[in-house]
Length: 318
Length: 250
Ligand SMILES: Nc1ncnc2c1ncn2[C@@H]1O[C@H](COP(=O)(O)OP(=O)(O)O)[C@@H](O)[C@H]1O
Ligand SMILES: [Mg+2]
Image (cartoon, rainbow over all chains, first blue to last red; front, side, top):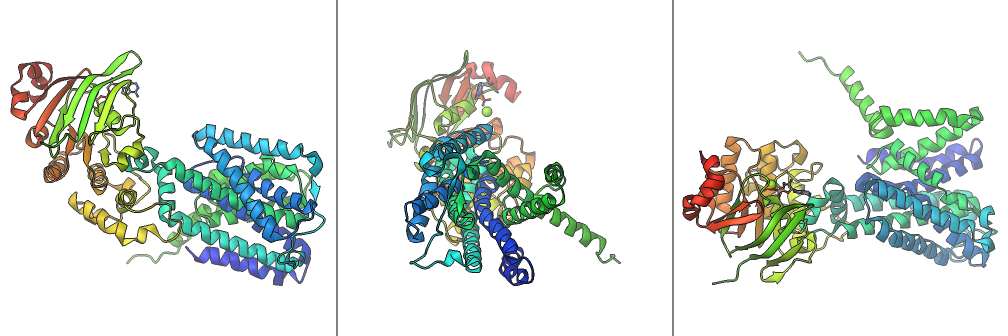
């Protein structure tokens, strides 16, 4: 159970060494973005995979975190000790406040209302004329930390992102097996039973929603610094949809599946878009195929293949 | 005499045009096992739902330990010590048997806003859970997924979950529903051991079980309490025999 996540993190850690022989900045850039979106995907998997709360406005959390950093930067405030907490608090507060409304609904209504709030954030950002409106906002200086500039050194930045990803993973891992996590998972299994045990599941779901928002905010903070730019497109519903596809692709409710899904989605998209201009014509059906054929996503597929392999190579019984 | 654990005062409930609970006045005394019988559709489950808070009455009051709980939510009532089982098994199928019960313990002791530490490894939760499983004879199946248990085992698990809450009142909605003959006999044995430890409101179709276990029996017909009394008095009541028992007892 812990071997696969360790291997993934080790892979991320060793990549810069391997990349040194080739197109270093390109690869570092690509994998850094994978890790950043993985952080947001972890938060989404927490909701969808463990709570059956299909949030379709998740990109808003990323966008709010990113805008918080960029707006502060445009006013000359670059210190991460200020901008990071602001990004986290803004995304968490947005999640908490919208959560108080979204979590009163269930199923399709929950999907629709989270989508609506996501779109609200998108249009709000588009209308922020002082901060670029539709065109977005360029960050002229990356965040500083204690007055130093760790985010300017691509390698250092890369490892900061990796550390954040590992930290978030451990946090989520701990969360799902904790007392809190057990109640949250129980609410997915049987909400009525949980209520008759004495749990007001709304409070637990709201807390999880806010935590998920915080992870999105962190991803937004890192993304703004990685791209030196924020735009309303960060919050588009397509982005929210991509995040959902990523976690389904990797395998819901496993946490490392969220990372694998993000990695697979990004690399595949990158590869196919290099082959042909109409890559989405291949990409779309391919995703549908994986989701249909492999229940449990790529992780589930790997499990099925491993089981088949073991069966083929089992010692014949005497 | 101590005050009744549960009092229903003038409870009414309509589903559309259908009166399912009609001016029900009803008590469960401290320590007693009070059975409610009546044909299918009489409104027994709806009555239990109104007591546990899943269904709001149109009028009337529910008093639990002399406190008006009519406006309280389901979890609030549970926190006060109201535990129930369901006629249609309601468990967490993806959790192990012991985790199902440990959650009930967790709800009772300490906070659940704890984000670190593995809940499944806490002996403070597992020990009482195991004890409850032991009472219903499920010790050996503690680590099995609840969804994989046999029907009879699931019925027993429902009981263990309710027990682990250490309730002040136990509402049991047809705990033997769908169980085989051997399983039923085992469940009856469990119930007879629970009797006296908790006040119990028992809805049950198995008349042998009801007459063997109950201190008092109320007969519900078309949402109304027809009569209440000791098993002997109810058995002898010509009204009851005509309306219900005649066909049930052959
Ligand atoms: N939620 C509901 N909506 C409409 N009708 C209901 C509902 N729940 C129960 N009923 C109806 O109320 C009547 C009593 O049901 P119930 O309380 O389940 O009876 P019992 O448990 O005694 O068999 C039945 O006719 C049933 O169809
Ligand atoms: Mg019923």
